[in-house]
Length: 284
Length: 280
Image (cartoon, rainbow over all chains, first blue to last red; front, side):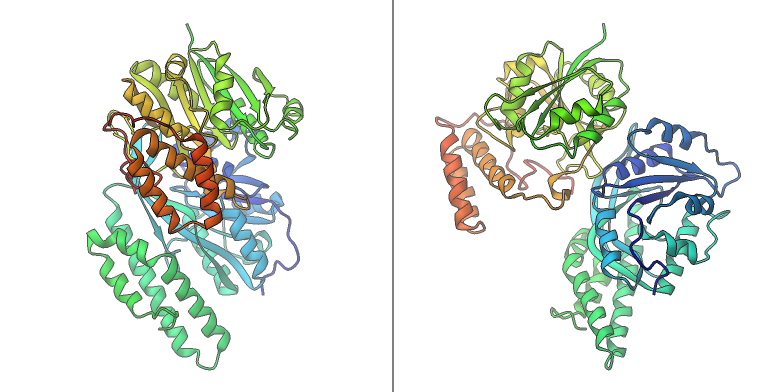
């Protein structure tokens, strides 16, 4: 069970790694916190792993948004979390955005599933161009959340669980820190999933094929994991039901959209093959 | 001389959005003379008192609607009657403009005299309608965050007041194109807009009804009766009969009569709700 028993405080602190990020990306990430439908939010910009990184630009952004959003700039995520007092922590890469319902849906999922230590939603992969004012999407795809080893997507966790899990948060690449954190939280409990797009990854045109291939591989790998879980779960009704429910959620919410989007690249075939093994009732 | 802008906001039970909107407006950075005019379509909803408590640092006025909820387009028309500025900036109450949004919109309008309407990109989820990345021209502009030349808006007769909610912006844009002006989408200008789709917990039944009424109105005015009948056929296969009857009744009350407008390449019914090519 997670360490965070009992009702935690309500505020969600959105942690954004800002060490090597484009200021326009950080600006957009902060405005995506402003757009949250969850009422009680704040943000933390972390500049903590690159010796040459400066806090000047993040601090200027924080100052510019003061009154609109409470933004703290820190060189020590660990120190900030110990002082901050937020009930929930949301993590995001700086080339990504939180979609408006991110905190509302994922906090609800963690409240509902008390055995879960982290919660994650679907991701929109937005492919577009860099403009003078930032990123403009020209294509968007719904993707499954990243699972297993690799960079963490956007996720949320109870602050007490994050602080209790002992993962070093300072002195490392922010993305590596959040991936390690996500992995450790998952090791300690379940990952609650919400089959609704709740975050957005941004890629410039020219990059997408490799990213999509990775996404397909990741999704196909997760389907294989679930197939194995179903096969192993003959005597475990709870495991069987959970695996089948996730398979069904994947089948309903993502397969067709993703496969259509990938058809022109030919990358839909491995994904389609994986999903063809899932019968309409969710069984493999 | 600095450009002048009247920022117009039509409120309707918008108290939960006002603090963020006011904070966003206070963060605007623009070499522009601007003021805000609110019209409250639900004068008993406490927005006026809330505004007083928020003590905005910018000049503003708030007017109670004289006839209850007169709708989005009629509300903006009413506010625009008194405007003396070169530009009108229509802002939804559920928006938060980026600090440079107004400056970018005005700069675009000043640089391109043929642009009658200039729309900001909605954030974090952009609208999927296509635009030309070179010229920025687009078939229509959303009214959620839209800069209009005051003279053009008045020459066009403003929003059609028969449209209570939705599609009045598409209709205005198409009339703008037909009058020889251009509609521009400026992706560098951004405005937070938590759209209806993301505004969880809200009863959207009225919005759905007006969306269909607006879609029928556009077809009747710009495409003719055959497109109206085609859309009604689609609705009869998908809508609850009670809701369909409400849509029909509301549409019949405002149905444009006479021949449809002459065709224009910018008027399109492609991609439901997008009215043209979609980027995704």
